[in-house]
Image (tube, rainbow, N blue to C red; front, top):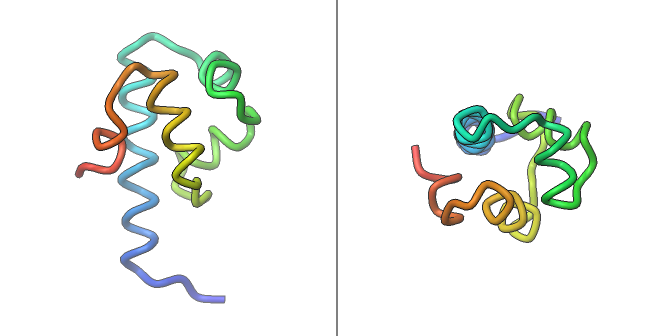
Length: 75
């Protein structure tokens, strides 16, 4: 299955933003996963742009990182 290039770009933007903000907060992937109540491997997949997180998951990540949800999807 070939994904739409726009979808791959969107996942990459979210992944870069999650990683950047998490690192700025000096938070490990493990801590983020715990705070957002998601699996550790899922966090890694999101940061690598390999996973397509739901709106609910992105909202939980944004809350765990103490940022508005829009910040995760803005390039």
